[in-house]
Length: 443
Ligand SMILES: *[C@@H]1O[C@H](CO)[C@@H](O)[C@H](O)[C@H]1NC(C)=O
Ligand SMILES: *[C@@H]1O[C@H](CO)[C@@H](O)[C@H](O)[C@H]1NC(C)=O
Ligand SMILES: *[C@@H]1O[C@H](CO)[C@@H](O)[C@H](O)[C@H]1NC(C)=O
Image (tube, rainbow, N blue to C red):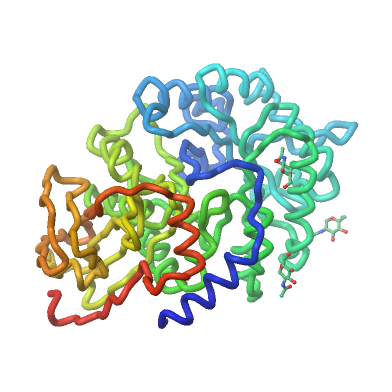
């Protein structure tokens, strides 16, 4: 895509559109979410430690604080599906499962808040949730008020058992009722993914206006194949997806599965790095009681979290893909004159069993600030010092692994004006730049 087309998309989508301005999610939300790891396990009789119950969420809240995640920004404890009784009350209220949530959600919410954390909940814009519990259709106002009464901070609304065509009206309508409660709640939508599945083109103008985050693609599963399919989806569709992200409104490639069963150490590093490039919500779905220290260290990598949480909120892109090697780059602060800093991830999708060398000049990556960049590796303790655009950097990338670098221009830090100039493209400078794939010179 050439620069004019990029500008046409960005300028149309972002310059003239109002985003959801509830003041929330200025950076991508971070926390813990039950679904990928704990699913719909309701068998508290035989599996009391792993079933979806208030104990599970209390325990995870405890660990998010005591194991140091909270101090790094992980703040939400989010319930997913399977928390409800199968029927509403006689007065039409949602009722949490009486045996698994005996203290009720107000109490659980208080507990989570008492730890300095925030509380998230799941429902569905349909007659049922995906697992067959009561959905919100027909009860939008009642349920929005129930969430507010329980002091919920984050609401994820799924899209099973509903008509994708109704979502253009339905998701904004529920957002309206959330807003009317007066309680600020992050609003996570599944609106685009269900429309895409049904062959529709989602109206992202409207989605940005009404949701703080939204899913575009499949649920993540516990496998490298699943992570790869998400990376490919975001890379292959980036021209449509990337411009929609920004403070208050994010694409959600789904949970972090680091520390579970399906990813190797290298693959886990890759998920963390690429999610940070994608400005993704960082919602861990892992058993924090048993996670091994090396995986915990990945989730607690401060430098990569800082990339994810960069205040410009510009989502990165795949700028190179050839022979199983990909390069992804995300413009970040600090910004100096018209030059952005970048996080750059080198990804090796090859399976030939030995690390691949990738050599590229900063200029070829689009990093052309004459004063240069201070470059460091975000996993390895390697600092390259200050490099000028003609410097060739060479990295060794393990199979299914990643090398992620940060290249900072001299700071002159004014995020809001920098973001504005990026969106309006008033300067001739394109932060994704003049990158010209020259395959043979790289590997
Ligand atoms: C939800 O249930 C109502 C009442 O049974 C029905 O009329 C409606 O078609 C259902 N909606 C969906 C999306 O299945
Ligand atoms: C409700 O919407 C208005 C207008 O967008 C906004 O200013 C306000 O902060 C919102 N309130 C809540 C609680 O989301
Ligand atoms: C998309 O949504 C926007 C904002 O709600 C609206 O103005 C526009 O007409 C919609 N576009 C289409 C094609 O429906």
